[in-house]
Length: 319
Ligand code: AVJ
Image (tube, rainbow, N blue to C red):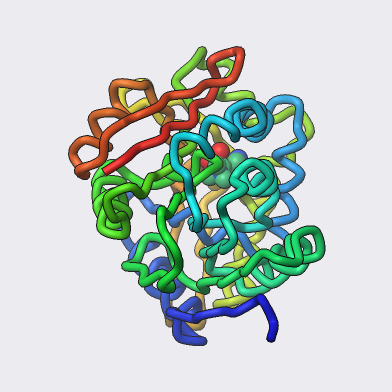
């Protein structure tokens, strides 16, 4: 019997339908927006991996530092027997947790990318043959039905990805996570922290232009998936700090007046010269804000760990 099982909660064509709905909605409103999840095709995922190695992009290294230092504390505080990871991607940082969480025999990675799940499971199982991996092909922002595995469960949501959700979406997301937890279960949440503006902006506008390529890659996704005729060099990459909302915003700014055709939607979208389309929000947090948002979802902040430079935090929350 294979220790790798998958459960699909997304219909095979869900991705295409969701992309069409998001593009239709986002490009026919003012200002224009696209949700960040469409960055991550094969090329976009590769560019993101490259971003995590850039000197300016500190969150991945800072979070790894905390995980390495605190994994034994996390194991002791939770006594977890099942690890559920939302948006698990390559499951790269998960190793640090699995090494310390000696009571965990079942790992439930949740991701929309079936290929990422299969690749992650293959390499984890090669290292830990006794691990049971039950992958969920699912969008973590929708209601999840995890398999019936032994508790206590630890649900991990790493990388600061919660910052890609708008405040109302975060509240709904945290409430749905809360609904997954039984008494004794816990949530491990990674959040990037508010810091000096120049450090934040450089992390999203690196000197080598990798983040610019990552941002523009969403246009090639629309061209390939919807037959659109966007050209990456008609747009400039913009990263700015919104000090009121305390989030980084990535935008694509039209270098000239243009009209893009999107045949699959029967749509022509006009951009004025200089018009900006928002492609990502990446919120930065403070401890009091995290505590309050968790509290409103019925979760209690039990531990708050940061890296040595105070750039990133891991929170452990209980019900
Ligand atoms: C993967 C969502 C954590 O918001 O920092 C990196 C994505 N965007 N550079 C982030 C991203 C631009 C990243 N997360």
